[in-house]
Image 1 (cartoon, rainbow, N blue to C red):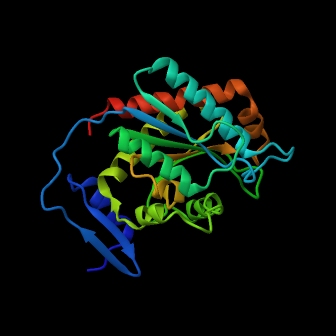
Image 2: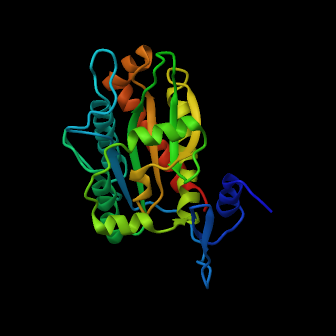
Length: 270
């Protein structure tokens, strides 16, 4: 019996309660089943990693005026950090970068995993802006990790965001990246993506419409061993959305909406 990868992944994520480690590799499916199932527990968040996409020599995409993605992502990341510190002082909040500097994708994951070792319940949020050859393309997307992208456009977005993978990979991170995907971590990542997308749409639509929750193989998500999502906040190549994304008040709205999504995720049952 032949099954598409999407269906196999859906079974692992939605129909099997315990953790299944798996990997699609060269036409084969490798599966590692645990000897004992992990007991269920409620979701909790004790630490949040905020990743402002790009930075330094990697500006990301830009609008026609030359305003770069790295500036938008850092602005929203800073507001998210400040609001989380204000409203949830009991939660540990860390930023991957606090200024305009370049951080390797592998080092972003390594930093997040260091926090994970200290604090068991961690989530990872990465902020980005989208781009298109058409200035009519519009909307936000929330991604979680998968080896089988939702669409060809999702695959292309992942390739675009992954282009600054370092030549000399950290051997520890390379080892982490070679591990099988965890169905429990993916399930929680999808739950987090759904919650963030729901609150983003409530807070920012119709200014920036929803393009839905999608999945793709982002390097920064693959290396992070906790529930992780990547938010494409809107299209900088769309004049109207670019104007909004540059606006500080609108960046604050994005930050508040994402935090509401985190709260929805943390309040739900696993």
